[in-house]
Image (cartoon, rainbow, N blue to C red; front, side, top):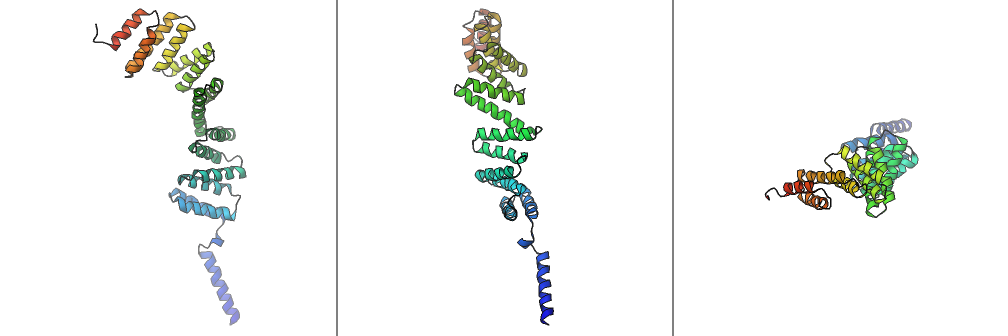
Length: 273
């Protein structure tokens, strides 16, 4: 009787283990799967617990660390997310999704250089990862503006060139690169970039006025320079920027283009005969 009873108890325990959600019966992969379903249902706290259990079973589970990072990020726990993304990339160095979201997390922390490094890593591993390329272009442009504001013109030029390589049709990057070239005394390169700006965005008044001033002062092409300045004034008026148009008129007054000055004045003050 005792033997039979022991067998019955053992069988009962085995059935319980097989049919219940006892932690011991779960593999790391199963906890990752449960975490994923919780994550997609926006149950982020539940997802976090699932991923933690997966990692407790198998600490070198890159997928669990990656999704745990995503869940932390959704909860606004950026520092914790960064830690998990870094763990995922340490386990699998070519895990480009983890590198990408590490870049996103760095950006949220204002760590621009670190974000750029993460995105650069993504593009090296997977050159077709468009989101990383687009973000890199924006960050290169941002860093170019930062360098420009600090007077670090050569560094700014390098960043704008990187941004343009990723997105050749960004008029603002061409404009800023052109201005930076001119500040460095590289007039031909500056003119090329300003003309490229206007080619991409014909309604860019600042590119017109800057190009006009360069032609007038540096190239001694007075008529051409005055014409670009005059067009800048018209563009400012078309865009409802009277202040910009007035500033352009003040610039145009320093040229010898009297007819253009008169015409722009009439457009500024139509009620004055």
